[in-house]
Amino acid sequence: MVEGRVQRRLAAILAADVVGYSRLMDKDEAGTLARLKKLRSEVFDPKTEEFGGRIFKNTGDGALAEFGSSVDAVQCAVEIQRALALRNAAAPEDQQIILRIGISQGDVIVDGEDLYGNGVNVAARMEGLAEAGGICVSGNVQEHVGNSLDVSVEDLGEQTVKNIDTPVRCYRVHLESGGAPRVHDRAPDGALPLPDKPSIAVLPFANMSGDPGQEHFCDGMTDEIITALSKISDMFVIARSSAFSYKGRAVKVEDVARELGVRYVLEGSVRTAGNLVRITGQLVDTASAHHLWAERYERELTDIFELQDEITQEVVTALQVRLTEGEQARLRRRQTRDVGAWECFARSQEHLRRFNKEDNLVARALLEQALERDPNFPAAWSHLAWTHLVDGRLGFSTSAQVSLEQGAAFAAKSLDLDDTDPDAHAVLGAMRLFQRRYDEAEAECRKAVAFGPNVAEALVWLAVVLAYTKRGQEALGLIEKAMRYSPFYPDWYLGIQGVIFRVLGRFDEAIQSDRERLSRNPDQTLSNFRLAALYSETGQAALARDQIAESPKEERPCLAPSSSRFRALPR
Image 1 (spheres, helix red, strand yellow):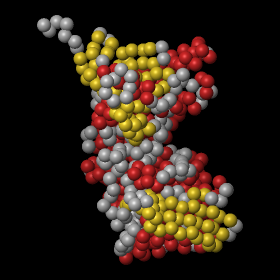
Image 2 (tube, rainbow, N blue to C red; image 1 turned 90 degrees about the vertical axis):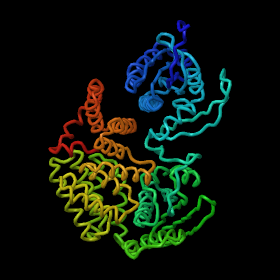
Image 3 (cartoon, helix red, strand yellow; image 1 turned 30 degrees about the vertical axis):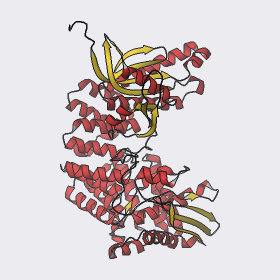
Image 4 (cartoon, helix red, strand yellow; image 1 turned 45 degrees about the horizontal axis):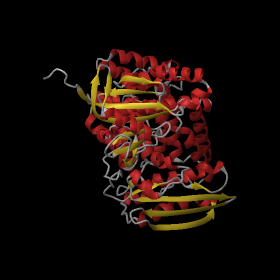
């Protein structure tokens, strides 16, 4: 008989509970209940609803939610944990509400509003395996999520859990903002596939001087080597943004190679003492764990430029890379011979990458000091141009048009001194894009890619130009290539990827890109507005209104340049 038949369905189940709930209640019952209620109303419940979930059971210290998609369940969990981490960072330790979250996908039995069955049970067991503030997912969830989200996972293997007959495969989700690689096509062991050319990551050289004020010197040394190697077409060089994610961390080169998808790793150290500089370097073949090259130098500080050239040449020779005549010439070109100018330039880089008004002004002042010492320093001119692009793009100046014109003039000055500098071509291309001179923008960005085939940001800017001239498919290939050069890519890459998906009419993926960006950097106002527009375009008016309401109101006046194309470009 059909009557009495059990209703079942497939669902992704999220199980969450509060770490140390009994201890918190024992210490401050009323305060704990108030904080938990606030957490539910301001974070857990809204996030669950945002990602299409339904809370079907609340317990004293946790909740169970149902999702139609494993991807939505995991993204919801990631955003909840990141939001709680921010809230807890500002709260005393004894007032922090910390969750563990487990997710499984499986068959569930429907009983009115409640759900039972294996899917619910396994989710609860995954939650028990999660760390405080962490997320664990079952193997079938990981299979469904695959490459969809900007998180990395750690395989914890088969786990024997209570009341489940067979072992369950478990994965730990890593939540570090900007520190987890987007999952591309990975090998069975989780490694990125190796490129078909010598591939290398240059790790930040360690500061052995005992003086934190010398960090810029070590970072500048690393930057110079990455920049030089990135101009070689027969190599694959990991971008600075990903290489520097390992700065200050004790890591194994084998792990770095696996995470970044390269075979070779260059590491070293710098010690300055008076007018002397001591540098060590070693190039490791992680496939064999052999050192292909290692050297120790002690030179006068004024020899720093020759040392950078020597190390770069040693790497090229060890990897048996053949250089074209043009590449040989470009590697021999020196940006400056003035150590003081170079140090000002190196100091400017940290400030330039922060993208706020105050640091942008500091970066500009340092670059101007570098140019006072050496007016023929091409990179100082191109980076000075970037400061004016940042001013015009982020509304820091009174006139975006004037900022762009000034920046374009500085980029042109850089190219007068060195017309093969990919960075100068890229910044001039960006200026021309914002001035709606699209043919010139494309020409400059293509030159940037030609002269810097491994420069991820040159690929990204060319992708932006192509997106805004309605060549979305080519643009998508370029942004994906840039993400491979920088597996730990900056969040603004996601904003550009979202624009490209929108151009292609792939609105769900555009929404996902902007959601991911906001989960990594909630203060990106333009992504809030673009996400609201995407919701509106796809008939989700309520979500569009909510997204507008979440935007930081004080930033809105900066986001209305005259051109609609300019306005839509990601920050």
